[in-house]
Length: 290
Image (cartoon, rainbow, N blue to C red):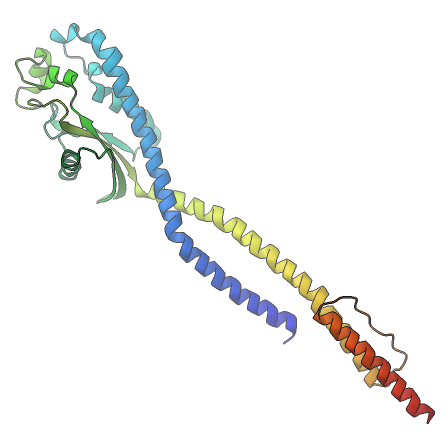
């Protein structure tokens, strides 16, 4: 086996080990980056829903306030506006969901599930906490959940303080048993965006490809460059030296000297061989004359 083959086998072994170590080191980082990108997307979706809530409560609800005494308009409820705006996202990403679960909602459909109630209670126990992100396993797969607290504002008490002060059309629809007794600044509900974990997995695979393609390209360039360097700097000079030495050993005194102009190890070897070549040729000529 020649030097080139041995060197290439060593390069392949080192490359395989390097790729393995790179993937091992990058795997957790890639997953974390992908998960954070998905969470950031969920934050943008939640900010959009929060914008719909703010617009409704500040500009739509005041316009309908006088009419609410005679008819209940769900469009005047900020949570309704947030959900309807999120429907635009669900039209293209049906697995993405947005909820505003509450411990004591007016509409029973908004009652918090056990895991949602745990999030709300966590916000209540930690007033300074503004966001919670977690992974949750469901029968349909794993989801990333992003939640933010919804504190009760004074305007909320117009509908949620007591049945007697709430709009009669609303009480007629939902009854007087649910959605009352809320207190100002109390965490009554939460915004929760659910994103399937496979969105993070798809993003992680994409990031891995983005990392592997330039890494593989760099390895290929290094492999070709080192082989070219090995060929012109090591193998070809050694082959020429070997050819010259073989010719001299066979008695060819007219073989031209091989000159390799370099100050590296191969250059010193070439210079040493040239001196030996001259000495051998001179000695053989002297023996021939004698």
